[in-house]
Amino acid sequence: MKFEEALKVMKSGIKVKLPSWGGYWYWNPKKETIIMHTKDGNEMDIRETQVVEYTVGNILSDEWIAADESNCPQLGGEAAFSFGEAIKYLKRGFKVARKGWNGKKQYIQLATGISYRTADDQIVNCEHDAIGNMAVAFVGTSGVQMGWLASQADMLAEDWIFAEA
Image 1 (cartoon, rainbow, N blue to C red):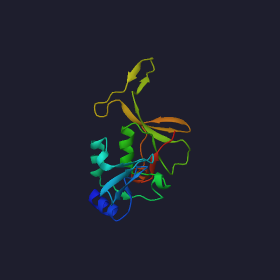
Image 2: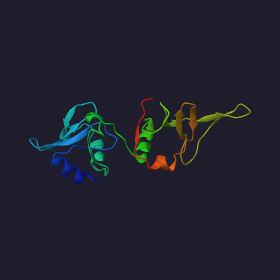
Image 3: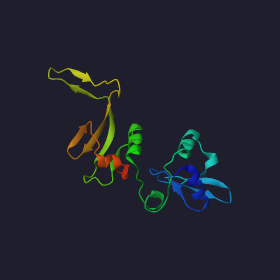
Image 4: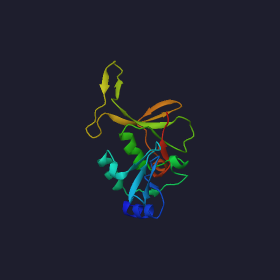
């Protein structure tokens, strides 16, 4: 939902969050403001935010959901998000995985500084005009697979999570 709807939902007493968040936001009727309950359990009046650009960026999102005990770690659940969000987190340096992947400690991450050794022992840096020197790497039980490609199921899934590895 868009923030306009999320604000109405908050004012009706329901907590809201973005899918990847460990915490949530709620409306405090006495203070007439939004309280941000963080993933660490701290609470802050939205008017006291230290990173205004980040907070405004969140407000502009259209992916707001009701926070409950199934989807919010601060309420006992687990945060999950879409593949689009997973890509954003990869670009920010996070490791992500599908909740449903069978192998423990399997995840993907963004690999940079990619190079290889040729048959005549030369080191070649993999520079590419469109993407630079990076690729998605799958880390699994058999090692690292460079240039991992998402399946249709992976791209359409909403069960992406932050990897602990």
